[in-house]
Picture 1 (cartoon, helix red, strand yellow):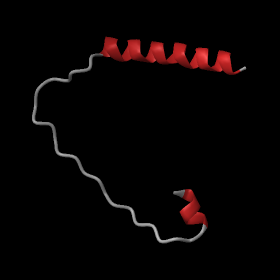
Picture 2 (cartoon, rainbow, N blue to C red):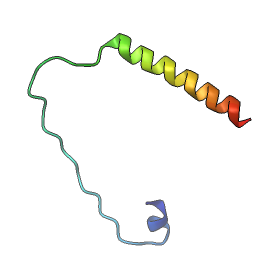
Picture 3 (cartoon, helix red, strand yellow):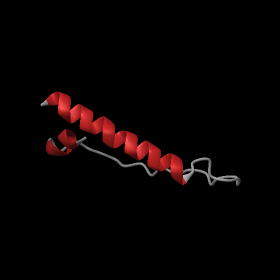
Picture 4 (cartoon, rainbow, N blue to C red):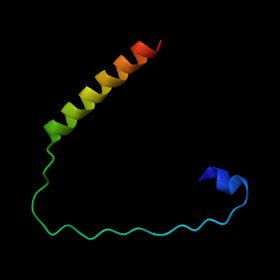
Length: 52
């Protein structure tokens, strides 16, 4: 995308809209979000450790 700006090509941005939720409850709870975050931190640590 930035290469096209660099070479002064025409770019158009199209707005994206989403329909509203029809109701109900959220399917993702706070505990699950925390578990996913902790697992992501562990994964990034292992990736960093193996790359060095």
